[in-house]
Length: 178
Image (cartoon, rainbow, N blue to C red; front, side, top):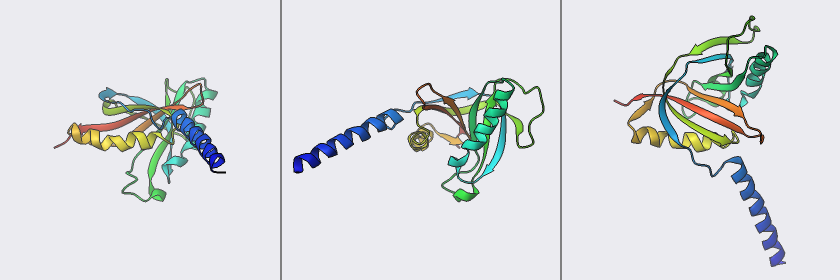
């Protein structure tokens, strides 16, 4: 009986490890400070938990696709979830456009340009569920070691990968710490 339980445990542990590896739990995150932008975006404003922006991203992508305009999903996160109640978190969600729309936007969408500036950047190609854990967990240490501080809203730009996962590019606006 003990051998059967041990075999079941090992099989389940192996399956769990496979999925954690596949989803990106053990991938390294590399940071780089660089100038990026400008970002031409169409978006909707959102108030509430950040993980619920998916439908807003999809709506903007659907609009861009209807005009044959390439776009990548994005989220702009305006508040620090460690300081703001989750139901009050503010964000903008939609897509980064490769070109300007030639027709008016639907009533639900807004358009703006996020100017070029210095960002601490990182990429994560795994499930978006692990990205925030991996990337945001290391940002504070990087900022402290490199004498930088955050200076504005964080951007995440999402690229769908052929294997069903998502590559997320993170842009943390930074300036030198005093």
